[in-house]
Length: 126
Image (cartoon, rainbow, N blue to C red; front, side, top):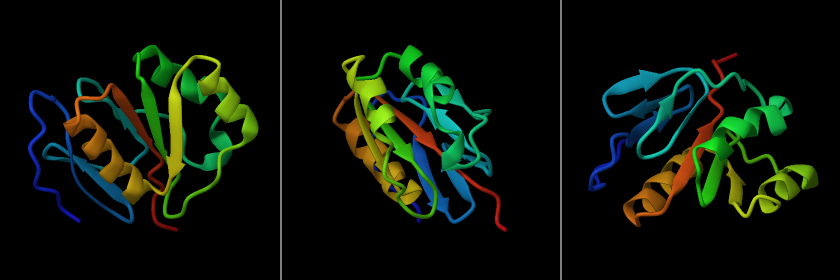
């Protein structure tokens, strides 16, 4: 799916996604990544939900978001209670959803001017 929407001064925008990739600006990424309107980290080492935890979340927190959107792949995987406590203890909202929904949500929150970070699990096709 491709997006056509205005995002103000954001440096990074999700322009599209499919089963095995996410397009940020004009670059297609086929691996997990995280981004904010001003930062892009295409080397996020999380390849599956089982790898989520404090070490994976720490760089997201350091970006200073008010909300974090986590795309868990082709289907939504509910968060573990300790993950929710991790974010709540830092005063940061967090939402877990499938990766396509996370892409859309990131764009909406960014367009609203929110300080949002989006972490996307992109797994290579089996």
